[in-house]
Length: 196
Picture (tube, rainbow, N blue to C red):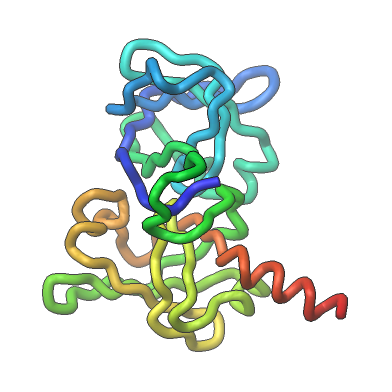
C-alpha cells in the first residue's frame, strides 16, 4: 500500500527485454540498504517488486500485462519516474490510500497556469470515468490529487507549485499519457451497488 506522496524522482537507467518480461533499472536517491530484494516500490503509480540492486540503482521486471495497461511501455533510458516506498503501519497518511494497481491510462487535454499553480484537465478512459467524483481523490502518475471538477469523462486537478516542482507532473503537456488509479472507496462502493 502507498499514500500517493512521491518521495523521489528516479530515472530510468536501462531498459531490456528478457525471455520473461521487460526489465527496468531505476536510478534513485533512496537508501538502498533499507530496501530489500522483494520490496514493493510505486513507479508512476504502478507497484513493482525490486529484483536486484546496485550502487544507486535497483531493477524491476514488468509483465506484458502491466506494459499493456500502463504507461510503462513508453519508458526509455533517461526518463524520470515518480517513486514511493511502500507505507509502513504508523506512517503519516499525507495523501490517500493507494494500492499501486493502475486502473487505466488517461490523456492530458490541457495544462494552464493559474496563479502559482497549474490546472490540468485529463480525459479518463471509459468506463473508469464513472468512479471519479468532484472533491474525491485520484492518483495521477503515482501522485495523490484532489479532483476539482468532472464533466463526463474529463476531470480537472490543480497542481500546487510544490507538486509541480518535485514530481514528474511538472513535465505534463497536452497529449501526454498518464497512469490513473481511482479512489479505493469508489471502487468498492461501485461494486457494492452492482451486486446489492
